[in-house]
Length: 328
Image (tube, rainbow, N blue to C red; front, side, top):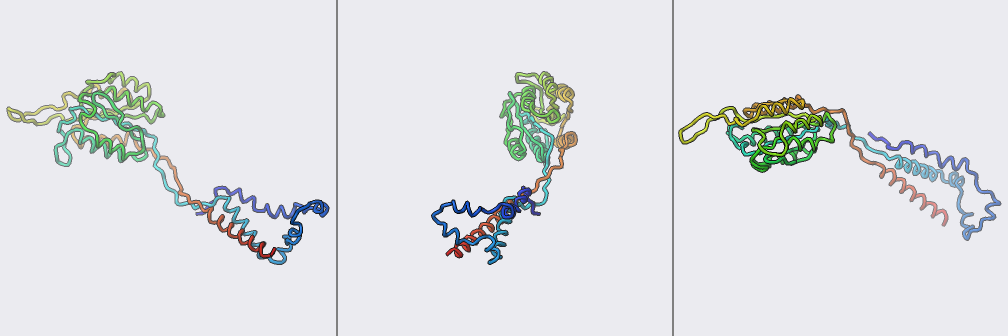
């Protein structure tokens, strides 16, 4: 549909008629006192009344030009169909463990044994793609915690940065407390209901300057909700010099601390022993922290004022040419 951004400009339409109707012409006595070098030419110019009487088409051409000029000033626009915008009230920070133990191949992906980080990338990547309208940030931690991606609506970039992460990139140890502290720092300025951290690790805190429970106390003060995910199978078969034996690859996982982190901050602790459980956990996180869409719409607009403005200028030029011919 066509709409006008400034419709009040149409109030100017009667201005020429009002000027012609109510502004009196200059008295003859005043004209006698006006000295101009081209007085004879002015006397020979046809008045508006003579033009209207002799050539009514000219006055209607001028009226049309004025209407088009006012219409252009009112800023006509073509409005397209409304487009719904996905808006959310969530700012999610993902913290992923890159310590050396994440290379243990106790997960399966598409029937193939893979390490824990590869499985995490696959499942967390799908989670990121589903969070349309959310701002997503990424923290990678090992010996220390590093902000890999600040909060952004660019989910594709966050997904790419997660895919490019590698085991040992941040060190071989695990600094869970530092990861939480960095998340608190990055989410501190956000509204209270938007501060959410999803932390994934397969071990215990073995590095860093801040202990996890101390970081949790800081998170409680800053209203940061933490969801923790402990990854790693309970049992796997390994081969050694004496044959095969069953071991627990997750014996270093500190579930007590991970549970305490979630409980103190109002979140939840999840245990992912395989890829299927990890997928269910991220699906559950979608339910616990849904994408909250507000009904906001955007209508694409195209400016149309050049058309009436151009036609008005053409008509004005035609009127000038007619005036010049009559004066010759």
